[in-house]
Each structure stands twice: as structure tokens, then as C-alpha cells.
Length: 370
Image (cartoon, rainbow, N blue to C red):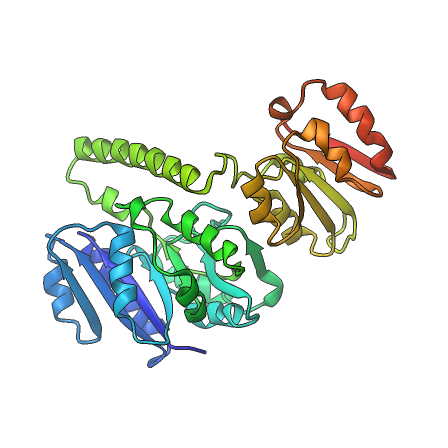
């Protein structure tokens, strides 16, 4: 395995940063990593403490450069040849956390980046974890973190709270896009760039770390300041989402997962043929693949860029008008036809469904999501 450069951003989160770094020291094999901390103009004593840490390579910013630019600073000074791990300062790592993720990262040369599950996150990466304090959390994680390739899931996006990037992939994909400063959606963008470069992303469901979440928000001085920060966060999120959609020319639904996929009721080893109409960038297909690894999956997407992205991993066809064009893409019969976003796609839905019936297997079924 390569050595790993662990890059942490610090901004007025002294206690979280201290816990994070101490957990890395205690639970990560010595010599397998270097610690790089980029401090974004903290004023809570973080700088003074960080300056005393002999094993930390510290970058001191005079102003808050934000998350993407700060991460780029850390990535730029990492030791040549190292893998790069972007780790939030409000995380606490656990037994075998890095070793497990490395096992997945190097299991296939096409895997460009991996992440893990946690107690506080989006994108399927949050799991139910019952514990009352950090001691109980570590006991939970020690039992949970058993390397198991069966629990490695390919996915279209990884969240940046813990994002391990293979060095070869970084050299090809490059740095984070700083147009998303001060932060939000830079991890979506990086995941899309990874996919476009031909790399796979893998979620390690065999590895858990603790994530407090919104540490800077919680550090607000009073309720008024918290409310202001919350509103600022919402506005920033909407702005950066729009930047992402315009940059990639994709729809807001590109990363949606439709509940209609739960209508597939089969044994885990099924080889059922499943057609997902309206799969966007493939989230539904990744979800189904995780549940039914041997199923034969086909997707239909109206947005040509989303079809191209999903097509990196699955058999996906582009139909500019699903109701009109889909019949040119169908062949044979399907055990499940899943129709997503009924209200968005169809002018004469009943007639459309009748035309689909010949493409069902004898025991096949059509399921619809609004």
C-alpha cells in the first residue's frame, strides 16, 4: 500500500481537531501516514496547539480560504507518490479504519477513491449506530470494522468527510474545483470527474468512523449566530448546486434514488433482468447492484450527459423523449420495468404502459414512481 497523506482543515474547531488527530495517532499504524493540517485563520487557540504538534505539517492561512482551496493547499504539499485522504476535523477514527479502506482501494486498479460509513452523513453513508460516548463508539467500531469485500459497494458519489484518493487517480483528475468555495458540492464535482476519467468509486460498508457533523455551525456563539449561519449554509448550498448543474449540464435529479427500486422483490442472488426508466446518472442502478449483484440492469436517461456518466458503469441508453424513443432501445423481455417520475415524462401514460407490456417476461411486472 502507498503511504497516505491525511489532510485536515481547521477553522475554530480546536477540541474536534484535537480529538481527530489523537485518534489518528492511536489507531493508525505508525509510518503509514503523514498529517497535514491547513488552518483557515482560527482564533480559538487551534493555531497555538497545532504549532506544538511535532508530527503535523501545518499551513497557516491568514484568512479563511474555504474547504476546496484549503484542501488543495494540503494536497499540493503532500509527499510525492502518497495517496491523499481528505478528512473532516470533526471526525474520530477507529480501529483498522485506514487499512480497511486501503484494502478496497487497491483491490482493483480501476478504483480511484473510497470512503466509509458513519453516524452522520448523506448519500447512503449514514448507518444506525447505537452508542452513548466515544468509548462505546470505539467498542462498536472494533466489532464493525472487519474487512469484507462483500460489503464494498460501487457508487456514483462519495461524501468529502472522509475521501481516500489513489495517487494515480489524483494525478489524472487533479485538484478540487475552487469555484465551489467556501464549500459544498465540491465532492459531487470531484466524484463526477473521477467517473468521467474512468475510475470507480467504492463505499466501504465494512468500515465505520465517527462524525460529529456541522462542527463550525455548532461552534457559533449564540442562537442568533447559529440561525444566521444556518441560513447562510442553505443559500450557499443552493448556489453551489446551481454551479454544479450548469458546469455539467445535468439535472437536479442526477443523484436521486427512487423508492420504486424497492419494488424489486427477489433473492439476493437473482439474475433478474431489470429496466429502470429515468435513471439519471445511475443512482438507482448502483442501489440495485448493491442489493442484487447478479441482476442484469439496464437504464434509460433523458439527459445525454447523465446517460454518458451512468454508461461508464452500466448499460444505459439516452432517449431525449422517453415516451417516443424508448422502444428503439428495448430488446427481449424484462422481469421488472421501473418507471421513475411518472408526472415528468409521459403525455399518455396508459397508452405508454400498454406498449411496454410485450417487453415483460411471463412473470414480469411494471412499477411506477411519482
